[in-house]
Amino acid sequence: MDALTRLVAIEEIRQLKSRYFRTMDTHDLEGMAEVFCKDAVLDVRNVFRYVPLGGDPVGPTGPVIHGRDNIMDWLGQSLPVTSSAHHGHGHEITIVSETEAHGVIAMEDVVRRPDCKSPVLHGYGHYYERYAFEDGAWRIAESRLERLLIDLHTDEFN
Image (cartoon, rainbow, N blue to C red):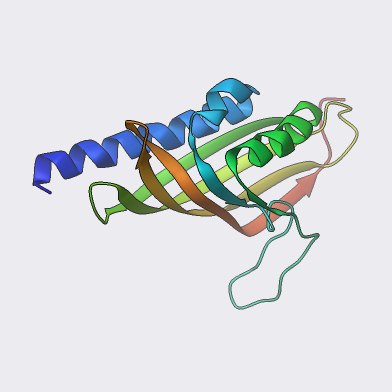
C-alpha cells in the first residue's frame, strides 16, 4: 500500500471513530449500526469498572457482545437511560493491509442518568480496536474499552 492510500485509510478510520462517538451521544442507532461490521465484537466488560495501572479491577463487569444486531440491541437498551459526551484523542492507527487495521484511541466520557440523582460517571481510558474494510467502507470489527480511572460525583445543578 502506498503512503497516500495509507494516509487516506487512516483518516477514514479517524472519521469512523468520530462518527461512533457522535452517534453514541445523540442516540442515533441507525447511524451507529453503520460503524460496525456484521460480525463485530464489542467488549464492554470494563464499561463501568476500571483497572488502575498495576492494580486490580474495580467495579462491576459488563458483557462481551458478538454480532452487529446484538450490539445494536444492547445499545438500544442502554442508551435511552443515559446522557453522555464521549471524546477520542490521539488516534494511533496501524494499517495492516488494504482490508485490516488496528487502533488505540485515548478516550474520556461523561455519562449520567436522566434522573440527575444518580452519580455522574467521568471516565478515562483507551479503546483497543480492529477495523475491517467491509461493504466499501472501514468499519469496527472489534472494540474493547479499557478504563484507567472513573470519577463518580453528584450532579451539582440539581
